[in-house]
Image (tube, rainbow, N blue to C red):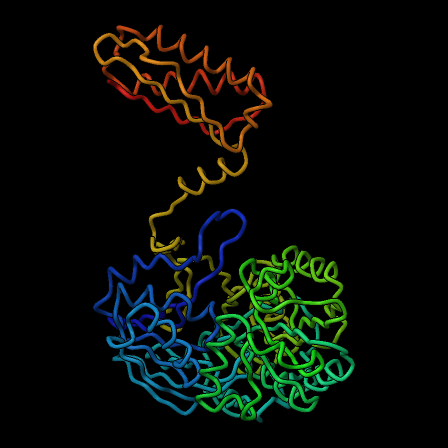
Length: 533
């Protein structure tokens, strides 16, 4: 999410979500902390969306529940946003505005225009803010594909025209800033997919990003040419294909799509399955198929599984596990960068330099990517003539102020992560995550003591419950030591502050922690429960 503000007018660009890593145990989704925007809600004129990927639209329902503003996006992007809004019960009350590369909008002191770009999903836009201080350009995610699928060309002439007017500040994506050269065209993938379909002997399972509509179309074409019916597995795949076909971005021959329960009515050579899970997501279709945990669909020996994608950094371990599982099932698995079955949707170094050269900005801010990618993009900008002092690498919440044509990084506003966990939004914080981490690594020991309210004596023997710490039957001696320690400590406290349960709990917790660490060198969570009768 980016915010452009001039005076009392605020325009937001994108509102994505990100998936949790291994440190965010149990968290479903991570969204933005929008405290600054809530404080300035009366100044917000609209939300502009560059394209329909999750890291750009995933947070929109959560944002609109707090601040309801008009949302501007292209046809396919709006279609994908509508699915999310419907799930959250927000569709009827949201103002959705359709835009395209030729649209022009006014937001008080700012005029906004757009230009078409290529990416791994159709209908992507770059955004141009015409402010009293000068032109600010946000590229969105992009690459330069000179032979795109569906002849959906990027508007390079318009980019050059924008640059000729003088760009004050360029915000440009950095995802592939470490990769040299140019990206190959998406068009070359279709021939390779068809080739693998012709070589396959039994069922074909092919996994790719559901949002890569051009890739999905190539799978449809390959299945049609090799006389295979197509099955869609995975909720996001079904949703995206449904929206893309309805809006005319996908063309699927009538009768080609069949349901998963009908697979066994056809010979294996007549079926292809397009599924989610190319990143090894635990609950996605391919992961469940790899563990024989998908109802009505199974992978058999000599079936072919094709990964028409490459792992996003951080997902390599999960993807490798899925590949191993598939190989154990006897499948023929086609994966890896050398297969020719995937090209990135993000600009490589020469394309990034082309964008910089077209826009010729005075100031530059690399966006989208890890710090090392932003750092590399800064070097690329220097190589095409942008002064180092005019390049800003920003952290979340940092502000660039431009006055009189001069830009400075002056301050930061409140920012951060909000965790979505089930139905809870923001109720899981660092303390909860710390406890979850401790529980996952060391386990828990619960001590239940029942005390006479009048004299502080134990009414019965303590109950010691252990989960994830030691196996009770193999640690009877240790549990007996804990039991005796608890009896001793309660006796010592008898008659002293016996009405203060907090002191009893704290004493038992500290004493048990010390004993268990001495005996096991582990620090499980200790949870004393004191019942007075």
